[in-house]
View 1 (cartoon, rainbow, N blue to C red):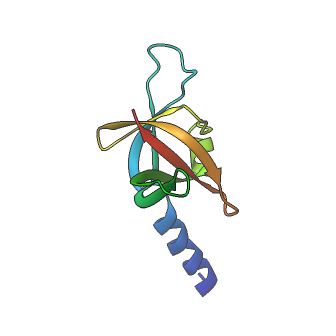
View 2: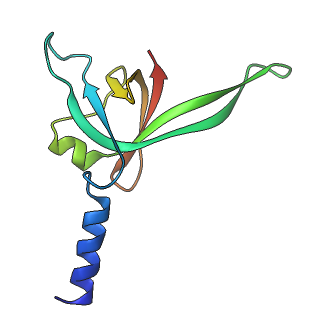
Length: 113
């Protein structure tokens, strides 16, 4: 096995959904009643934001996100959409926005529901 093959194998193992990220349960808003949620893997994050509401007024808050690999989600039968549901660490979220990136991933902007 060449160095290049070994390198790719390590990269694949480290970035596979089983070794990277944190599991969550995903449920489409269009799913029929009684549908079981799908387990997905991603990277949760919280970041401080400041929202301006005019020249004199602003508000600070926390934005929760969940970074995902779109190919992994598609393999699990999931296409992330606005207003779908995600349960992470026993907290229910609604997906407020899906922001795809140029690397085959996306950031799901979450709203606590």
